[in-house]
Length: 81
Image (cartoon, rainbow, N blue to C red; front, side, top):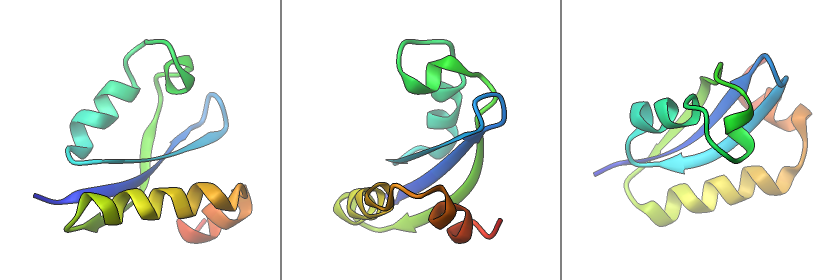
């Protein structure tokens, strides 16, 4: 199985969301479903970036690295915006 570190973007919130998952399309559907939590505030999340890894630990490590940046500018540089 493969794991993905992904970045989603919501135009409504003008925010990025960084996460990791094994099932990318299913996870995106879950984020766009109205629920409690950060991503539940919008239903227009789109995938803007992904990286694939062989191990869960690698995907989680990459997610944490990106989140530690705490920088919109760095995320936009990564996704090529």
